[in-house]
Image (cartoon, rainbow, N blue to C red; front, side, top):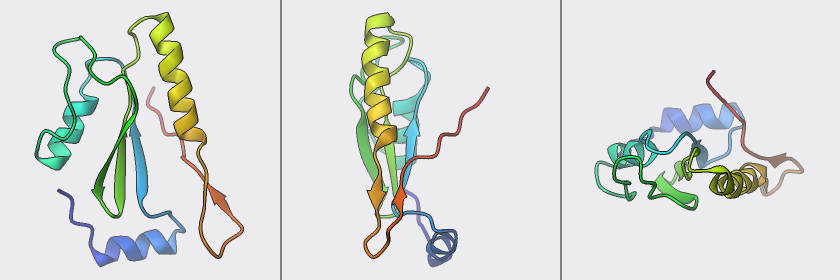
Length: 115
């Protein structure tokens, strides 16, 4: 499990980042999203599918610590119908906004992708 030091918290506050930091794992079915979560936890926190048979059907959230949360999403590529459902679920997750107490500013996810 991660050990977030006071220097991390200080850096997050300096940069105005929300705590906990949220990370959504997104990708095709069978690429290892749930396995990545298990590696980070050092245990079987997330159920892993068998081969390319999907296990994750809904978004599951895991608290790595009180400072870091990971969201395991359903895999893409299971068929048009399933992908439409998963895309809607992911859109709902990414559109969630939170407001810090004492602030007038709303915050949400920042999308980062790979090409």
